[in-house]
Length: 218
Image: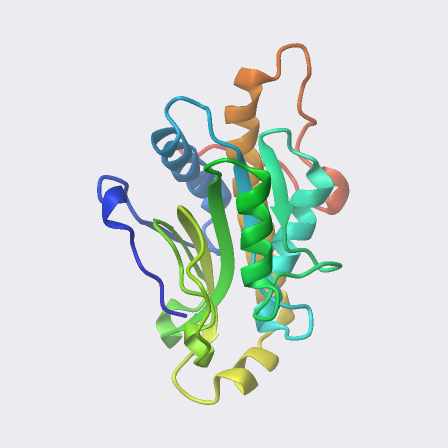
């Protein structure tokens, strides 16, 4: 799916990491933390995660999987998580969801998460970049751009029969990617949210879901 950068965020870097990198979640969290800090230096904006996709397509379920994981974590730093397996955000309700968020929060900082298609050699890569993404572009849908910054995961090869490709994407790859992205967001929010938590503490790493703490890279 095509993504686009907002010119006002040119000073923020784009990062890319593969899910086979043992430190992928940590590298993602470090970069995400820097992006969030620079986009909201006064710590005055509500942070909202919009996880786009549908549970009816394996390849397009990346966003709802990440949203469901984040929703269970109940991170105080995230004011809202939109898009889960139970209540997905997709083509038919995306515009309405964005309008609801705009009505609920004043100048929210939106982190968009979505799956995308790409070249064969890029499958398995996760990208964090400033600016909005353009959901639906990979399957020829015209939808509103989403996000002050975005995370996208390349789940399969694009260019031909995109709907069929998404339906035949390996669930194993999507699940692994969702784990890395959700853990990366979790660690970044844990670091940033701790500043405003006072006596309240965030939980430890969510090992009950099958994750283990990831060591910091040297």
